[in-house]
Image 1 (spheres, rainbow, N blue to C red):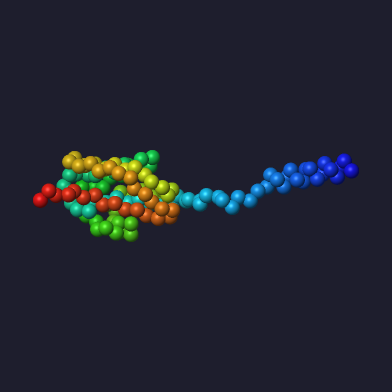
Image 2 (image 1 turned 120 degrees about the vertical axis):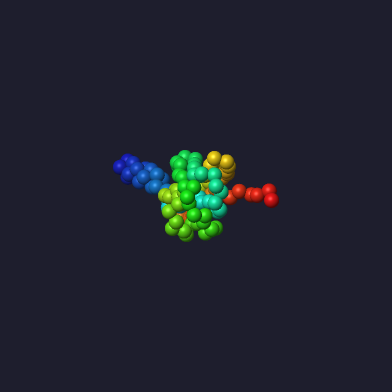
Length: 122
């Protein structure tokens, strides 16, 4: 009788340690990317782009301006940050005359792009 009782307690303890977690968070991969470019020729030298927690990239001053669909562009003169986990990232960018800062968000296995420009007072 004692053996049966102890066996039952062991089995119940084992079963209680197993659980089904139906509320698991969505798994994010490192397959997202953020791409920066220059929308126009700004004439301020290279643009250094910093993505907080990731690193720095440079858009060369010789880069050809890119349109709005930079995520699908294969142009080599882009500041591409690949293999990112989905989320929001602080960025800063600067050249000799201008500075840009902000937050950019990318979804899981997605792409977000931003083209730098300068507003004219004309």
